Length: 242
Length: 87
Image (cartoon, rainbow over all chains, first blue to last red; front, top):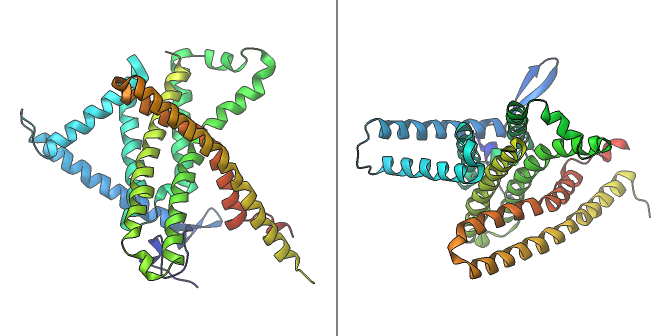
């Protein structure tokens, strides 16, 4: 059964159990065929939503007053919470990393909760989570290299040189486990929701899915956002060794 | 009884996916133990509830990794089966 167009970006279409990534538009790229998939479309929607939020926050801050109220109050609370979180787990050198942590937290949280609006979450695609984890991996190594210079390479041969392969595998296991953790949790929620909507009779779809959405999308999404950010901060601070 | 080789591979893959998800036992026990210890810690020192909760969640997330590897292997066997291509 082949369907195209906007209905395919929904997590569930019709009565079929359907939670996989769908190709929407074929493209020729370097001799091979690649697809614009549902992930790209939902990522674009998430990006537009974040841009609208950012514009609203900027507008509220620009005409802000000494006594904050409304949107300004909310934005200031968010930023203060984020600053406290990053400072609490990274210590003295937290300032350069707070922007990155804030950006990935906003993106992952809105991606995870986009299942509430009937979209297929972009983080339920391994491509998205692997990209996020690789950015974090580069940041971990780069910031460690900036503080310790060649000590990073020397550390791979400690405590004894014969452990070098195991240390190397350990370094590359970090992005793998981070990406698989986020992907697995969100994908499991997506599959559970698709099974519930696709397999059960119609009376089971009234009311009960609300609780499932609260658990799988809101609770699990928020926890995984927090965990990804905390692990990023812990790994960066750990590798820097300051 | 004749079974085509594709059906045999698909059936064995389904059994393998089920077996892979046995990996969920370990994280379940581990996360429950971490949550219990976290509750005990909050009972002893209610003032440190925030720190205890975030440490507990971080530990649980790391403990969950092995279970998620099992889940990913199950998903690969069911939806992106690499063994069918080998026939």
